[in-house]
Image 1 (cartoon, rainbow over the protein chains, first blue to last red):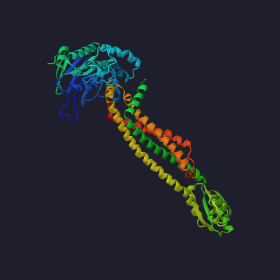
Image 2: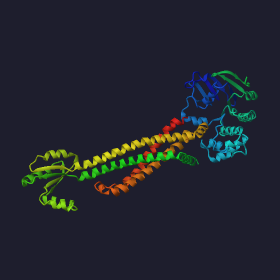
Image 3: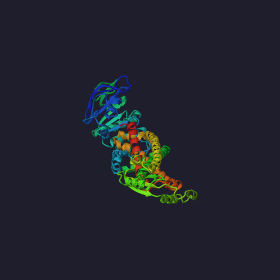
Image 4: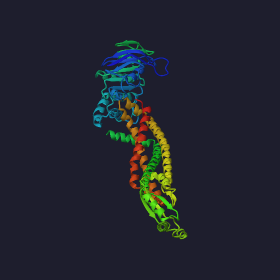
Length: 226
Length: 291
């Protein structure tokens, strides 16, 4: 499902590469943690998978397609197969929970009728039934992240990328979000999560890939934070 | 549904930044007015050339002491000249009558001239008015010929003035167009900045590029079209107040400017406004909304 082959990424003006000759493969339906200290290059992986940045060397394959060689006009269609969740939620402040999720459908050309059918379903799934018409500032951090997960999942993506989704949440709320991601993973969606939350990694007991200074130093099925 | 979404985005965008929008529309309008004016002058000069070049003639004035022989040989050679379209003889009496009607509202001038004082002449129409010089050379030294005057010279002066007015209008139009261009670019940048969250989310969920960019480009296009409409209004007002109004005495000399010609300028100006604003917006977005 996801293949990185000898990927090297050096940002302009950086003294050393963020990712250095990284090769890794992720199968369909897997749940993978990328862990490592700040600046180790783990978030760069998410950016590579989204084609927000392109590698200096190496190839990135997602869902059988070479992302590095992708023409820019094909990127939007490619991103529709990927859901994304971030530490800072990235919700639109002037839209309700419902509208935030519906926006994701709207901008890719789905009709309002489709949104009316699908959005309540997804909000129910993430446990926000009854709070559809709240604005982000009327929701707690955990609830906002649920809206973000709902938005990421509403198109039924093949892959869900999560960049420190629990970074702004307290431990209990974090665990709730993780349960949610786990449920999504069980529907067959591949989940790639970048984190440095050791509790979560230790509880989940899933595949752990540790990155340090741009290199993979550990790749362990059912790993712990270590 | 999506059209409604895009249009409401456009209106919100234009209103959010209303001072910039107004500045953009005004510069557009001024630039397009200048463009329209120079277009009108160009069309007008072309029309006038076609109209007057058909009518203008070369006047060959004859000396008072010319003999009948000289006159008839001159007429003969003019009539057989391949460059000449028509030859009309104007006697002293006819010249005087023409003079009387021309200056009928200035009796003092008419009184000062007596019949017989004005010279007789051949009025020569040329097949091609540009060939005046050849005709002049052929007849200037002939017996009985006093003076040869090309009426085209007078017209050329008017055309030169109109031409330089047109150039000035074009220069002003281009300078204002540059200002309009920069304003469009700036407005789009501000709009893109104020909507950066929406844009980031749109990119994230895979909205197509045109969907992200369309509201911004349309914002600029709407401003461009409004500018064109205002500019057209200014042109129409100029025609009513200046050409048909206070300057009407002057414009009697020129061929009249028809409304149909003014109307043609509206689509032209709208097209120019649309092109300039949409291309500027699109180019700006390529830098500010990188995928």
